[in-house]
Amino acid sequence: MNDSRIITKRIELSAVKPNHTETDIGQLVKLAEKFNCGVVQTLPTNTLLARTLIPNDHNILVGSNIGFPSGAHSTAIKVAETKEMVNIGCDEIDVVINLPKFLSHHYNFVLDDLKAVVDHAAGLPVKVIIESDYLTIDQIKKACELLIEAGAAYVKTSTGWVGAGATLKIITLIKQHVGNAVKIKASGGIRNLTTILQMMDLGVERFGIGMTSSLPIFEEILAYKFDEVYDRK
Amino acid sequence: MIENELNLHQIAQMVDLSAVQAENDENYIRKLIATATNINFVALFTLPSWISFAKELLGENSPILLGGAVGFPSGGNTTSIKVAETHELIKLGCSEIDVVINVGKLISGFYQETYQDIHAVVEAAGSVPVKVILECHYLSEKDILEGCDIVIRSGAAWIKTGTGWPATGATVENVKLIRDHVGDQVKIKAAGGIRDLDTLLMFYNLGVRRFGIGLNSALTIIEELGNRDLVMNMHMIKD
Image (cartoon, rainbow over all chains, first blue to last red; front, side):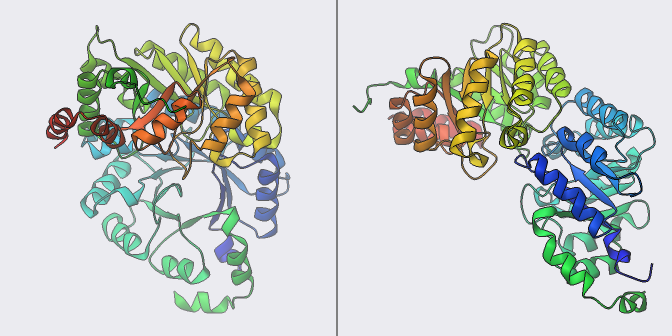
């Protein structure tokens, strides 16, 4: 893949705000096709639509968001959402950690909650959103430990609903703590290629980027000389 | 006509004291319940995973209603999940349900699907009153009016302006628009951005009969009503 796909395959193009219309989801899939994105992300109500809109000859994956964006749903509801998304052909599951319980130090509850989602994901990769804007450095470390123990495939920084989202500082901290035990998805606030390249250097595997802010980033990526990316590693 | 003869009790009986942000932890919920109990607010709202804890702290015979948030705050859950949440919350002791309309489907003009989603929750709730959150922040005037018609048709008891998550919620324009359209067919709950007594009274005079208010704003309003001693006590509980 000696081209822009090195980066675009890592992009999870997302439309996870309440006001995305059917037209927006159509646009989301078209953009993902055009720019060879790895994944499209929607709220559960639009996941089946996204699945249906992706042409058979495209291998764009469909992701959905569970317990989103507060994480404060009951475990039973998170499990029911997970099963439902598995049944409609979802490829990846992003779930929000139970933030209020985590902030209240109910770590056993949080661990069991995440384990239940992983157990019902039918082997699909689960990304756990820790909403790092709400957390201290120690809490970020603790959250990473819990999600690794739960069997998650990724730690994901943010929902994109609150705060600044992924920063180089947070990514550095997470990478130092998790090593290779879990992959990293950076999301929220990623607005240019420079940030993406810096985060790739720090070990980020996936990037969650909102469709509304994605066009300038795609333009930058298409204009970039990709041999230089190979030289970086 | 400015109504300023309402006393603390009358106002408290129109306030749903709410802690529905993701960062509201256990201590915050404890303070919320202590405040609700002391002031005797009509209802108390938390995110779903605090409901059983809140029920336990309130006790069996509390006059304070426990409210559950469904499809909250995105509205973008599937109908089957909204129905499952409704059943679960009522089983845990909720006697009011606030559900977020499917905002994206409403804006897309899929009125029948939007109606079916809300109607399913109203059916699942049975005798428990349902408030339908329109999330006006994202809606045009036309969307709001279509949303009102859907709420009336669904048999829900209330229309509610917002979740409190986006930047705006209850505005004078939106509340007037809703009131003029729905008349007496459904009641109006204003939520999102009510932080002082004047705002509350202004909406009251527009016909609003429930207010979704966070803990700090509720304490401000009580203080403005001249109950400084009560607020001091509450702050001691808070800290």
